[in-house]
Image (cartoon, rainbow, N blue to C red; front, side, top):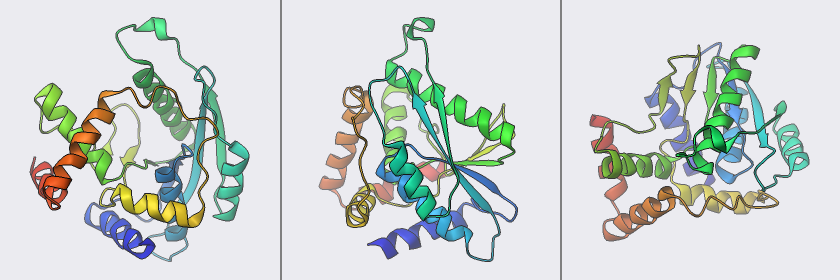
Length: 230
């Protein structure tokens, strides 16, 4: 299964032009299986002669959210994979926009911290660990709630307000594959799971996405083809 992930990772990078000579890439390392897999794959890929690029990792601790990651384990993980890890701290004030959920505000502020750090340190790309399931679930959410089939998380996105591109090298990788390999490799989970992650629209839509794939095992590939046409 790991070889399948590597093949799909490489295919995604080639098909969507995600890696180029001279790239200085910052991986957003949350401590979950997806970002850890991405960091590991990019570290391995960076040791190949072409394209020539460098990779570092960043982990953001939101001090006002009651969950905990094992930063010492993440440091050990990065050391084993030859990556420099930057640990940053932040927080947010819910009262600034009571219409937004804590989940949204936390994610938005994490990204802002990461993008500002990337700009300050001269990274030209930020790599996020969204796999194909994440991307297609977002697409379904935007169709269902916004009526916008064109809005999703593309494999590569040039940011408007930062001199940075977002890349998603796991865009062709299925979540189930990552879960299996992460268990084989012994990836550790967070010390305390975020109490808000199970009460979002995304979880409901993810359940629907998996139901569609139960009805038709080729559903994800049909949806990907339709999404990329938009």
